[in-house]
Image (tube, rainbow, N blue to C red; front, side, top):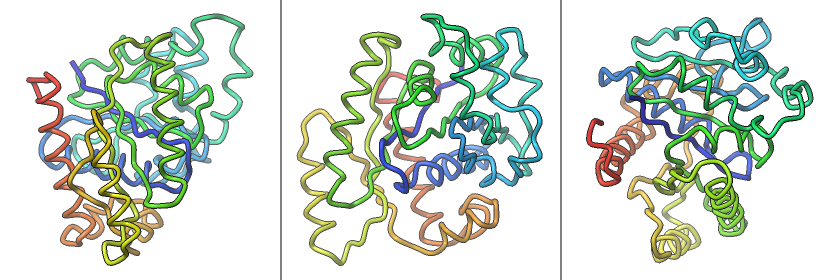
Length: 262
């Protein structure tokens, strides 16, 4: 049974897509079978894994709009062994308006994946920078969330909003939803601000903050433009090393949470 992890933040530009693509690539290079799911109409995960969103006629939108649609028929294989993608394109933004009024709209994604995607080791979700229908659908479908958190003055405010949304979904749609941890991104360790903010986050009770930090580097922008995860494009870079360390921490955290099969 797949372990699912979603990357969530109410703020854009915090590294959700980069983190999703990088972790997926690391797991795949270690021999795991991974499905990356793009739930953002901006389709950055899709392009970041080497596909042109505008050339795709079948996407994750079909899985939500058509209850009988086989997800297997929508999944595409990336260039990297073991890493598959359920892609998106900008048409995903119109999905909610195309759904019939029903109480189960936010659980359509979960039912589709539960039915057709049992053979993966991991399912990783990228989400839009808001708590709209698409993000709620992911929160209803995932086991865990990771919160990439940019070192900025708005970070704590955004964290509170994220945790509030998680609490709401846990009550209404997914009682088993758990926060796996918080990943500091865009860290500049030479600044006192980053160091003080990290110390403050690590002092929050009952919230795991991963030891790995993702520092500011042009390599991440270059990998996005190249349509390759940074672990592929620049495998010996500091960013690639950091994401491999993050993967180790994620696996350890999952074991601590009781996911013994990871």
